Image (cartoon, rainbow, N blue to C red; front, side, top):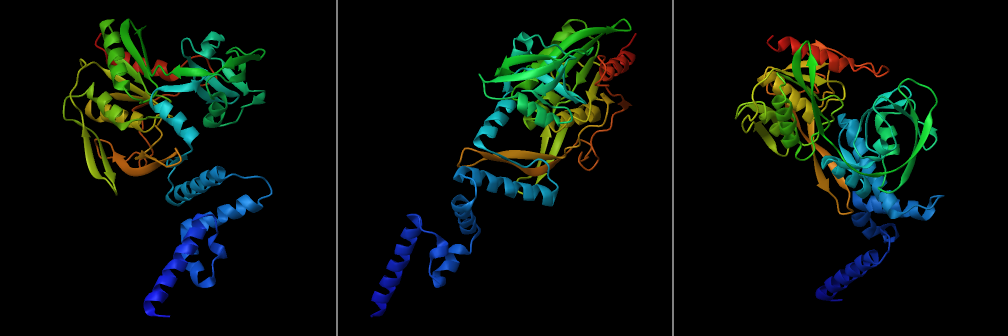
Length: 396
């Protein structure tokens, strides 16, 4: 055979074998001399393992299930190796839930809760939500979901059972704040717009004080915060307690814009360092609110953007921090979409407070005044302590 003919034959054979693979053949069935180039890659090995599992596992298993499991496995390995608690794989369904939370909405029954021994204590019941219409009030405890006790479960595990697609039903066991018999309520889940910021004026030692609670850093929350603080100031508040307890954070830009409400222009809010993105300094865009005494209330659930805002207000605005130490999250993430409709939420860098502190290394923000709430009592001891500290800072 002439050289040109031999080359043509080889190319044709290779094209035929590749077509066989594309049409459904398997690399393991190739001749020995061709198997290694095809099999000796991680993607081919994954495909081989997936086919073996689909064909031989003792229970039926689908390609989507295996693909999700493979991605979850990669993420788990990175989390273990680098002690990274925050990188996650979102399936298409869980990505939708995550994005709803960032947008300030979710499908559920309309409760803000904290974990207690018997389950989840309701801290806030959102107006016109399924929980509100069923008569659940703050201070009551959800002790079971669909007949199963949630005592001892993590907050994430328990709340995941209560949330679900709009229009579906869930039965919760509710225990009154004073105890008694558990009542069972059947609720229909609905899309709930999260009231991220609430406010009111209280009087302590004959001084009018503003109390503003902020639940997350979803899109546009800085505008809600500005409205809430302005409202209590118009009503005569001489200072403000900003309650960031149980606030898991959210969007970095919202933390910067929220800090800008209280600080002059061009003050450093946070700096970031990233292997792929380099360094960046995030500064305020200019204060818009009158300066008043300010206390920030935090706990172990205060994390991420909530910690960034707390540190900026403490370092640059002289705010007093009351509560227990914060979570201590010193890294930030970005969401990267995948072809299957899911996404990877990847840790891409670290952030530092205006004083140059990484909160993961410092184990969170340590309050100036220690105070904690006892979840087993109807009183809110942390809030009362914060208001008392603020009252002492307001001129008599």
